Picture 1 (cartoon, rainbow, N blue to C red):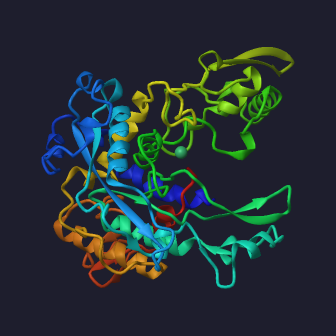
Picture 2 (cartoon, helix red, strand yellow):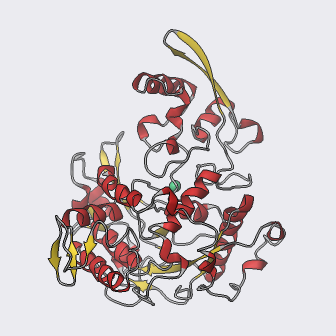
Picture 3 (tube, helix red, strand yellow):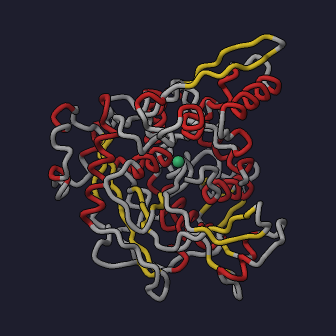
Length: 448
Ligand SMILES: [Zn+2]
């Protein structure tokens, strides 16, 4: 959507995260000390018991607060049950701990399996604008319209962002029933209301959003992978999506023409560039290409590889593409292979825990809400007030912010204003960087 707004803040994150800041084994041994010591009910009984003995004990137990939402009037409620959440965590833990992974997850006690947070802003991905309905949106043929005049995504994004920031000592996972989305039907020439069935998160985002119910699939592990700084293995851009061998040939030839020196397959190696790069996953042309070439199913054992002849500088090359169909950050995440994270993806996870996710390790300084009450924030000013409240608290206890080092780039002590900072109450604020941060927190470049 607006990735340029994300970049300044990712740069800030990078400043706060030199390679030397990667988690060393010893200082974070405390990670598990602050977390629930009781074994989460149900986890050993959900069918993965045979795999557990092979795994090392997890070093980091990260708490997840499941937040079941409904509209203001109770409509479109989450249907997630505690048993489903336990299945989801059990399946997620198997994936995160595979190949010696040292992260696992537990249910945070503030999870509300017995009731609902009734807030349309928290429950909806977008809220129909006054006078708009599914029918009026489907009748709209103005391709250039600002979609927020049809369905407001800003208020929900503010509400979820503020809710998550206030609880940065746990991973907030919304189970929402109001997953509306306005999409353009290019062939039909009109807008329409879609209801995505998947989840969504990103490394700068303060929450994960999940469907109204889910269970022991790979979906939660995939979204937590995004939350902990991992992109897709494939190229997210629609421009480079390919449906068959001819399109794959054209894409590789075009990529090399635009990026001289790159290997042709780099066009499909989406996580080799951009934010939070991953260098050890193979190029991933996605399942549609495998099916177009081989027929059958993208998960079929014999369908894992394709070879495509391309012409570069007058010479023919055969390019073989073999995506890792057991990588959980691919869209082969539903295939029955042992889904896992790569070493480089795990490096990103550890970097996340050393930077904007470090409050998950249990030393948040008491700056966060302990429950699910409080007014729902829907405005920009409300979100800014939430951020400044947390920043002031963090400054007082001299703890890092949930998103970057307090003393550095956005907030400072009011008596110690650096160039570009202005005093606002108990804080010095660099307004431009604060604005960029808010945009980054609200603007997710990864759709699901
Ligand atoms: Zn995804």
